[in-house]
Image (tube, rainbow, N blue to C red; front, side, top):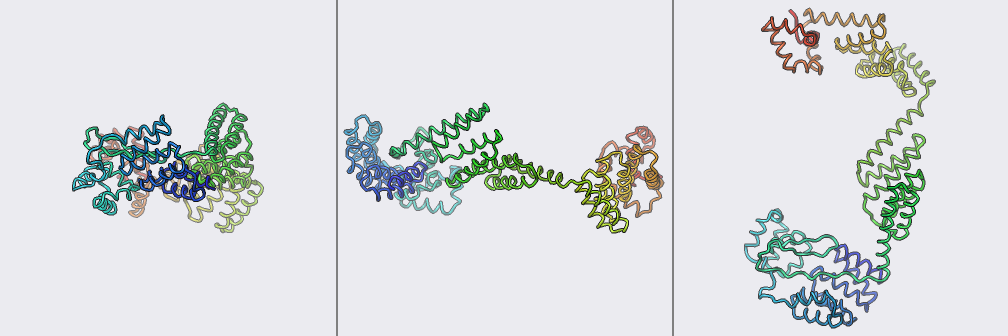
Length: 561
């Protein structure tokens, strides 16, 4: 139990959580009160929090329990240094060197404790004196923003009143940054590393005392073995990666499996092996590894990105195994779970592809030309009875059963036209032409709808395109005639004011008309038609200009008198 608590303390210390480390070491000491290593480790944790009085007490206990252990004197010296008791620190380092004369840490500590110091040996206190403190904090862009935060200003005022209470606020990163500005030094450090103080300017009269650096935790034999196994596992993983790149899959699996035996606290070995199984087509094995990775990852509170990676890999295996539309459902669900862990673009693409594939398979599975024919016949019956909504329902079912049947689209377009749903009808008519460009009925349906929408130029083009496939079709010929009548009516100026206004309003929504009117060349042509007849005659010789003018005349924008 004591070893377990000690291991937790070591881990917390390594991650920079010194308060948690103290809690775990205290638990271990309660279980094993004569273990000198535990007091040494807790002394280092106290020193890291600048609680040098407690660090000193633990260091003294360490030396008491193990007077022939050099590291105990190192802890003792560090605690005295933190308390600015340099003579006592030097004595502690000397006693340690008597035990281990070649110990470099003790030699360095003794040199530091023995160096001359001026009367003002606490620059931390001086840094918070007077109005200069606020001027420096205001001048620095990094701390200037903190002065707008009331809690920070109050904290700095408290420290200014009693600088010796600085240790109470050392966990506040803003205070540490402010201290660096006031001392003109830069505090650097990251999680799990000791804090260093680097000089920002070489010319500085008062230099701060360097903080005693906490020394590495003592590791038990079991901990050393665990560390070595982790290093060996990483090497196996690297060899597995190399084999995977060479497509030596069996060898890659062997290395990843060995890495898992050495270290079961890293799920990347599982996800990597799953990737190999996926490449080999062993989808069941891939899914098993991914499930284990997710379960183990949650137990270890692993990075959510790794959990998402395992789920995405599982989804890919499920897609590979899918044989019908329903088989895609677990894959889609797995991709969605992965996206809740981490929204990765690759996972999102895989989800979209799976949903698309499912939809396509559903259409294929639903395909039945015989039932489609029956549904179309039912639709025809309702159409004859003028029950158009019911007809639309059966035609729609026919289309689902056979999406390539142009007759169902054509008939539904006729229903939509009767119901006044012209945009839907136009869409179905265009689908007819898309599926079969020689299907004459598609052109008559489309042309009729465009005519009803009073898009006479477009209707004319549709009818003429249909005549290219069936030149003698009377329905198409009649359509052309009706369009010509309406266009000529505009050309002759025979439109009523209401008709003209309506046609102009509709024309202004036409992108082609908008482009013509916004074209600088055409705008000049229109000006010439009004002011320069001779220039207008020259313009009319240009076929492109003539076609655009005709378009504007048909739209009622330009009137011929």
